[in-house]
Image 1 (cartoon, rainbow, N blue to C red):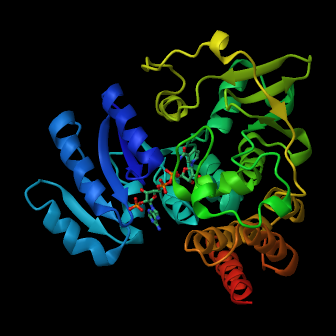
Image 2 (image 1 turned 180 degrees about the vertical axis):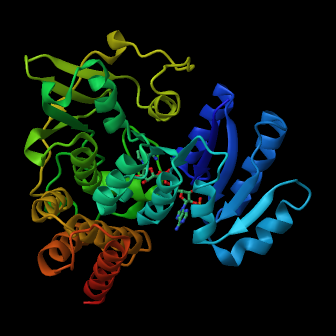
Length: 391
Ligand code: NDP
């Protein structure tokens, strides 16, 4: 029986991951959240009721130190360790009982727990793309050193990973075709996006996800982050990755092989598939899914990503070309900008402008091979962004 800890269990990926673990009969060691301790309590109680004594969690963690007492009180009648703080999330990632850790924390906050899991020799199912964008070099060299697997959960990267399973080596891949839905504002021009509200941007046409990634999908920052993530995971340069808009999110990504064959992974947009594949790889286990009917789908629609309108995508490419800590700068500026947009403090277009100008203006020191450099570049980018919002 595999033992898993789920970091970010109260989020969109975390909730679906728990459902997958329950269906697969996996043991869940630790659940972690940030502020939503009500949902965390519900999850712990459900696990105790449904998973039984051998598979129920032993740790419940909130990243917010100030919420320790509330969580402790809420779970007082259960035999479970309650912990709080950033370090406790990292400790949960490194628990000796873990066979695997699912990192479904949002933002750069997922980086240190990912490193802790790897340092402890645990395989990592990685939904948190920001950890590869900000610390790809660090994460993947640590994984090589510790001989652990980093298994993609992001649907596009899982699709690419699934497509290359049958190939005999990376040299057989000529190109990666990274698909994008285009988001809710596909086809719109900048002047049409000036008055976009958070409510409009939070309506993704195909996926139901956490707020930050939904905004990233609307600005196409998500595709920029994914491009960088794919470069790290599959050892390709951006020129070997083409972004293809696939409006219905049925093709989750493709690889073009050197003999001209194109392999695609398809299915209904449902994150339980890539989550489960990361947890069961190299095996496939049954998963109850509503059938996908190509007849009723009728057609698939393709298009091109518009980097003039969606500056975030252009900024991510520029950041990756500049190398070193620039992707981390792009990410930090974006995290600050998305939070400000959701608070109603800046406009939708200001998100892209902020990310682009941070990448152009800042000079982060170092190549991104230490955590302190990464955290400093992130801090610098957030500070820069906050100054721009005030103008
Ligand atoms: P959500 O916002 O729904 O959930 C994020 C989770 O992280 C929550 O459990 C949250 O706790 C926790 N969290 C937030 N801040 C911190 C912090 N500072 N320290 C520790 N934990 C924290 O995000 P999603 O589930 O949508 O996304 C998670 C990750 O997966 C992101 O990196 C995203 O890009 C990636 N991803 C998501 C997909 C999706 O379908 N949702 C698809 C592909 C990738 P709390 O609930 O208490 O706030």
